[in-house]
Image (cartoon, rainbow, N blue to C red; front, top):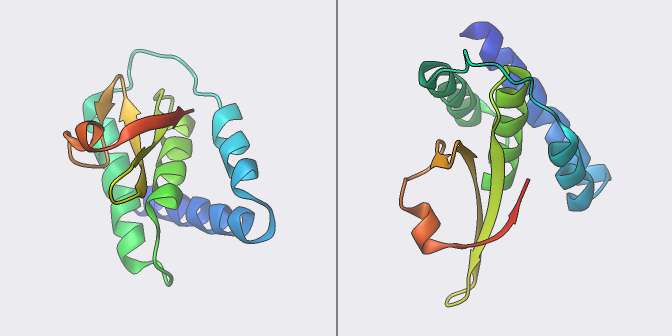
Length: 125
């Protein structure tokens, strides 16, 4: 778990640098182009462990971690561990609010399962 947390922390830091010195589109392109190896051993237990590692790092990270950063880091971490994950960005109109979450096989893994009913999907990568 310590290794996963260290990897998660590095990813969050790297994503923060991209967001500070580049642009959101650069972050989106990075997530979109990251490829996951396909194999059948990407079990749900592995997904839960990787989600837990990101969540723990977010608690102790020195700055507030927003949903976009957390979701991008989780997608990159899952793909590094051969699990095909997608980052979904959604929005609602009244009151306007946007949100990002991660899905594996069409199942929300880092948020409440009903989040897809609250936000209309705008982008998926």
